[in-house]
Image (cartoon, rainbow, N blue to C red; front, side, top):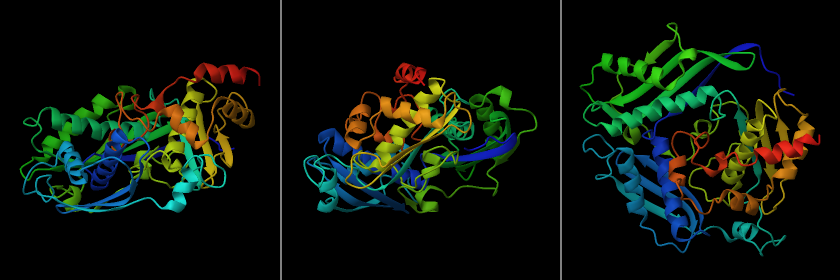
Length: 395
C-alpha cells in the first residue's frame, strides 16, 4: 500500500490550446466529433501532425459520415486563434494533407458485436488504464494540475474575450505550478511558471503583472503568500511559437491530459480515438469510478486500474489503491466497485454515452485543459455516490 509522505513539494504542468501538440489533439478530436455526429458507429483512430503552415492528417477511419477533413481541421485551428498572417501558422495559409485509410479488419472483428471469437464487443486493444480522484480540490483533482490548467485556461479566455486589451498575447503557452503538501494536503504554492507566446512589441513588465493578477484570481488565497516565486518567460522572449516554433503531434501530452503526474498512467493517449478504444473509454470509466468513490467519502484519494486483452470484453483485472485513506480495505472497495460498475467496453460506452457527444460537451473540448475535472463531461458526474455508500455499508 502506498504511503503519504508527511511533507513534500509536487509540480505539475499544463499547456494552452495553442501549444503545437494540443493543436493536433484538437484537430484529431474535431474529426472524431464530425464522424460521430453523422455516424455514431464510426471507428476512428486519427493522428495529426502540424508544422509551419502544414497540417498532416493520418490514421484509420471507417465511417459512413461525409466529412470535409480539410475544413474541419482549419476550423479547429481558427477557433484556437491561429488566424493572423505572417506568424508561421495560420488557418488561412496552412496546407492540409490527408492520408487516411480504413480500420484493419483484424481489429474490427474483435470489437464488433457478433464477430470475433467471443461474439461480444471486446476491447479495442490490450493494455492497462488508470483513473484517479482526490478531495484536495472542488473538482476532486490533484491541486497542482488543477491550478496549472486554470492558469492557461484563464489566459486563453482573456485573449479571446478582449482581443484589443490583450493584443500582446498569442495562442501558445505553458504553465507549471509547484505546491507544498503536508500530511497529504496542499498547504502552499511555492512556484508559478508561465511562458506565453507574445507579439514583438509586448513589454515584459506587462506580462509579469498579468501573471500575478491571474494567479491571484484562479488559485485560492490561502495557498498564496508573498514568498511565491514567479518565473515569467524565463528565456526572455517567446515570439515564435505554435507549430511554427515546434512541430506538433497528437498524443504527446498524456500527463497534461490526465493528473499531472499524480498516480499512475497506462501510457495510452486519448485524442483522435473513438470509444471502442479502451485507452480512452476505460480511462474515462476509471476516473468516473474513482471520483464517485471519493465523493461518497469512501476514501480521500483513490486510484482505479483496469486491464484488458484485445477482443475480450471482461477486464482481466481491477485494482484499487486508496493510498492509506480508505474507510474500508482496498479489497472490500474493489468488491464494491465490481458490484456497482460494469466495466465491459460496450457497457462503458452506453453508461457514459460516449458515441453521442453533445448536450454541452464534445471530444474537441476534452483536447485542451485536461480530460478530467470539468463538470460538463459525463464521466465527471456524481450519480453513483448513494449506490456506492449502500454497497459499502455491508462491508
